[in-house]
Length: 124
Image 1: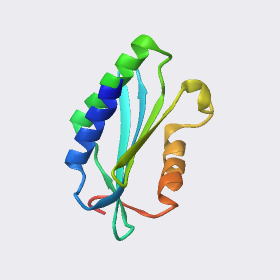
Image 2: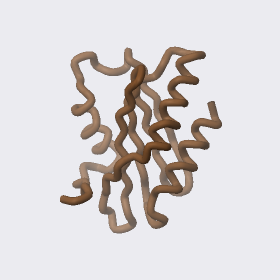
Image 3: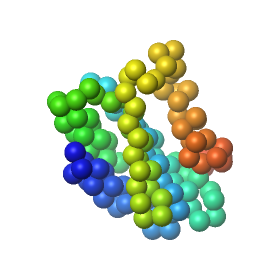
């Protein structure tokens, strides 16, 4: 499984600007469906959203498939890069409130990692 973390990290650092302070890749996965969000904070404290490149989406799904083959499949995946280190968090279906939708979770995840800073979206 460590290979998956390394692959995702390598792909992530290849697409992020060189001068980022913190980056968060958040994904929710089910059979045949991967929803992702990619955010990074620059050294001025601005937070940007970027579309997740297809190769990262494929790597996340491959990780989920491999994990599912050996374990209880996780549902959400957060990969945080900061200060040259990474941290991941997996949540399983029983750890997610049944009445909470994906669109409700993402703002909470952003607040947790970027302290409520406004996100700059492309073409806005």
